[in-house]
Image (cartoon, rainbow, N blue to C red; front, side, top):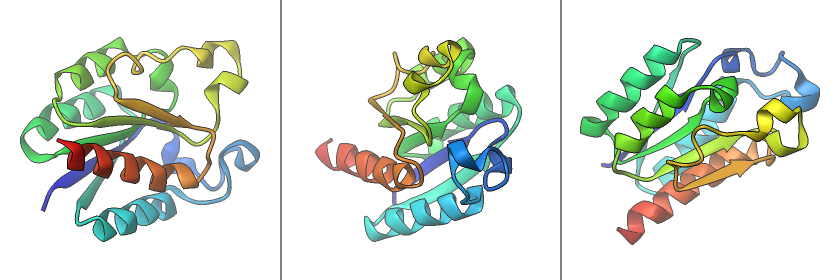
Length: 146
């Protein structure tokens, strides 16, 4: 069974309590379970890692080259600052989808730049909880097309 790696960056462990007016009231665990269910329905497995540390996410991307068919990444604020994470993703050959609960383009100017956009197949932003399910659908479709 092919695996999707779902990566969650800094502060996403606080979903459900952190700025629910922006990010909604669902916890990270609830988002992951929705994604895992959708992946299973598509015949895929889903592994999740959340870290508040950039290096952990980079190491996970490196390891995914041997274990995962695709990556979904909600890098949080690292989206706007981590060229190193983007470089790691560039080396991964499978489908990659960038995910945001809110719409960064409608927020503060520093959030308008994504250091990951140049290396992912596509970005999903502003769909709230639905984004996790849509991201799984996107990776599944990209895998099926290969």
